[in-house]
Length: 215
Image (cartoon, rainbow, N blue to C red):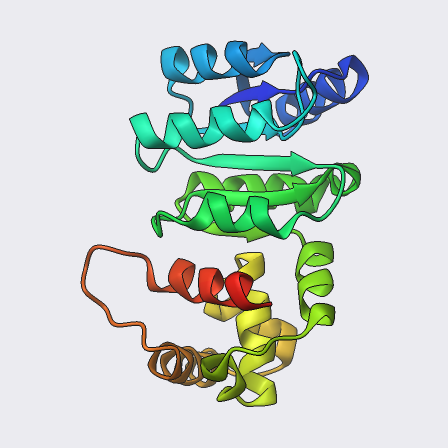
């Protein structure tokens, strides 16, 4: 894969570059500020980008804003956002267009190389990849949404793993259920959340977005 890494901390940026190259991927460019990130992504059009939320010049949310602007100009360009802390708003904004190709990971998770690269490859393929720690945080906050309250305990488990970006097969392996059983659960989840297959949106992304909006 052709990858852009946007991270202002040298050690983390260099570490990610070395890690990704060790896994056989090509880092075509790096960026250290929000404006530079926007320029590089529009120029390179990578297969996927890793972008830090907080970058110079103000160290607020320049990276996130660059990612959102790129997605506006190049719909569906895959981006995995890195954050120091769980920020529910960031995840919601990234998934709002309903098209997929988005991930949200905590920086500490980068050190689990297999998990990080696997998430990046899922995002590059148009899926979602939410850090398990982010999902756990959102789960612990509870929900008052009536549609989510219709879900069974097992369906909540499936939706949480769906939010991490796992396929039905991978969810089945995690929950010790058959892939067909997971397929039935996902169909039930879509129905209870009122998500129809109109051909324009990724239903799994919309389900995750509903989950994040009301967690």
